[in-house]
Every structure is written in structure tokens, then in C-alpha cells.
Image 1 (cartoon, rainbow, N blue to C red):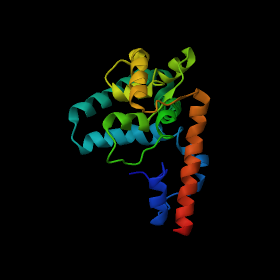
Image 2: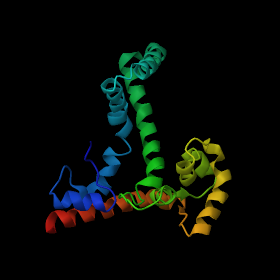
Image 3: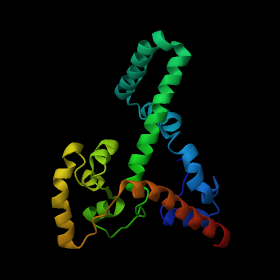
Image 4: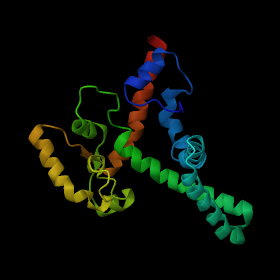
Length: 210
């Protein structure tokens, strides 16, 4: 487990009480820009996924994953050489990582993540995620994951169809008094930083005073 960030309200307080300080979490909203979007995929996911396949002996999946890299280097080494192809691969992952982190976390990291034993499944999905307002740009930029609530409720539904089910989900929420949360794109992105800053302050207070 990576102890890079503390999230929500429960985790930072628990880490603070236990005097856990793997990083200065009160500055996590600042170092997020250095190690979050730039490094998650090229420095972690890219290798962690391979190691998971090896540990769990998923040899078929591993073979498919390795075949991707073989095909990639066969294609690009003739153009860029070995070092150039490696740099190109990591540049692609670098760009991909920025998009992935911002798009996925604007719907998740700002929401309540602490465990709730007495909340039903449907309500949990509405509490753990939120939508970003629909527009041509937002749909394109997020790959239709701006309808994250519907994606949680219907994970196998093609993403370009999620907007069709949104009115039904809204009406069901209204019927049962469940909050259906949505926000503009810019606010959703800024809320990532606000949430990290808030959790960092909770950690520091617990670390110093509890």
C-alpha cells in the first residue's frame, strides 16, 4: 500500500493519532501536482500491474501485456532507436496519467469515502461519487465519465449511453430524498485540491494535538 495521500476525514485523523508521517500530508495539496498526475501511471501503475499478474500467476494476462510492449518496440525502435522508443513510451504514459488522474478524481476524491455499515448500496453510490455538468467539451474530455453516478450504478453500460439513463436516476433520487450531486468542470477540478488540503489539515491537527 502506498501512503502518499490521506483522504476523506477518517483516514487523516487515524494517521494523525497514530503519528504516521510517511509524507508531510499537510502539504499534500501542493505535492499532488508533482507526484499525482505526472507519475501515477508511468512510475506506478505501469509496473504494479505487471507485478500483480506475476504474483497472482495470471500468465495469460501477462502474455497479452508483454505482447503490447513487444509490438510497441517493434513499431517504434526503427524510427527512434531503443532509448527514443523508451522515452516515447513514458511520454505517452505521462500524458495519459495526467488525464486519468484529473478525470477520475474529480468524481471521487472529493466525496465521502469513509465506511458506512448502515448505508444501502444505492445510497452509497450517490454518496461516493458525483457528476460533472454535461457539455460537448465535458463529454469529450471525460470520455462520458462526467456521468459518474450512472457509471457506478450501471458499470457495464456503454459510457456514451449514460446520459440517457441520467433523468431516470435523478427522478428516483428525488422520489426517495437522495441527493444527486453535480457540478461544473472547473469546480470539480478545483475541489480535488480543496479536498486534499482539508484532509491534510485534519491530519496535522490530529498529529499535533491528539
